Image (tube, rainbow, N blue to C red):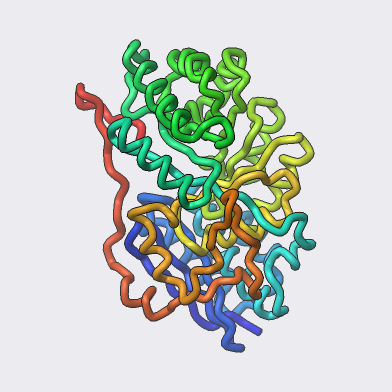
Length: 381
């Protein structure tokens, strides 16, 4: 069996798919994307496919991974790892179909039958935030996440802390004590403000504080942790097991959030999850794009012992058009308790509607918004 063709499809809703075809007719799908850099990621995919995989046997995935990672000499970083991630997903999809088995069976088998999803809630006003939370609970979710801050001044103000507290209080009022609430700061908070926010919001018993600071400043997290007992989480902007190695060894987090579309695909995320288990750290994979990435996460969740939750956004209002790329959406049906069953079909378990993918493909990628502070300087998005 050998690879004979491949295509990248830039799609609406801030994602893109990779299709790899073999001479046996088996097709694998991946989702290579660094958000806001779709075209650059696609160019990296082209170089890797032409350089290493054109005409190759798709089955020795680990060898292909090492070649793509190591033979470029300059390695790691978002673009290279984003491209490797999408290719890796597609190769696993092919391999699972070849052996007529779900990917997690090829990884050693499952340790669970289902995994809990969490749902994003939000709104400009407190009333909108309450309504969003009520909607999530009505759909069966018992874990939600929100961003307590928007554009944030470096030193903050009393109003900054007050607004964040009001938002969290509104969610807790609706959700009650049985629902987990994750807080994603999106790296918008400075070193000076992070400890104050961490201490102020603890009374609402959040599930975790995510990306309180940007990854460049992860050395600040131990200081933040001294001001709170809430678990500290990070990882969506770390791009390999070597990036996570520094985090593990520093003992600075309780939860890691690798992104299968950023960190090197299924092959690498499995390695990262195994490392996390050795440090007794929970795994809550980040996934803010489409169905191929989410299905890939589920296969790692299936065999990662310390996986406790899975992020998703494609079931959110305004993002459900991503489900149009599937002929059968039942793979992501949510049951009471917010659980989704593990994929049962071969490969990733997805039935991609290729006609819709081709119909909606765009030539111009969509960029992320540029946020600015009131003085005109660029703000963390």
